[in-house]
Structure formats: C-alpha cells, structure tokens
Length: 115
Image (cartoon, rainbow, N blue to C red; front, top):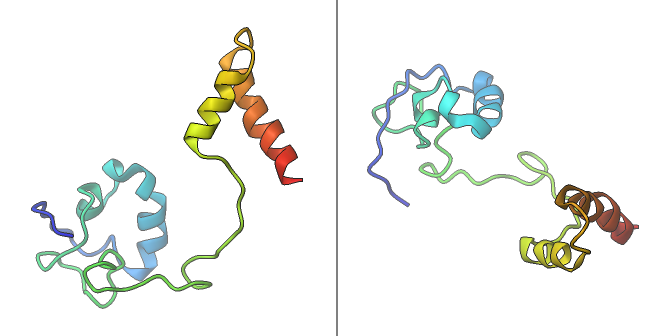
C-alpha cells in the first residue's frame, strides 16, 4: 500500500509514552490530533524526526504484526449485519417510530437471541 501523502512530525507525539493517548484516543478524531502524521492519516516516514525504533506510528512499513493477548484480545460477539438489520426494521409495523424500532432491535431482540 502506498500513498503520495507526506507528513513530517516532530517526534514527540508517537513515542511509547504518548502512544496510548495519541494513537488510540485521537484515532477517532484524527483531524484534531497534535501529531501531523496522524492528522494527515499517514504513517511516520523518513522525513519525520521520530526514532523508528520507538515510533508507534510505523507498524505497516516496519511489518510489525499485532500479537494476540498483547495488542488485542479475541472475544465472541453476537450481532447482525446492516442488511439484516434494515430488513428487520422494514418488517416491523410502519406506525412504530424508527427510534423505537431501533431500540427493540438493539436492546431487546439481540439480547434475547444471546440468552
């Protein structure tokens, strides 16, 4: 995977100490990140001032794979795909407001299925 987008961070935003806050917390709102690379949604590169050995924003270019039980935990989860959800919402009575249909689907039906 390659891109023409380039960025240059100062190196203080992608160290091990700040990785939890910056890479996880700001990943949902990258446009407000203090890190220029994260804000532009690219990995740190050779132009950045960060040390490649401690940078937490170079996983793909350095071919660092996530490790189960270290970086993530596998959990069994039950749910439905969007198409099924839309079909279920469609077959419910039309006089029921959408927010009540959604509540029924998300809180009641899925809960009952998992019991």
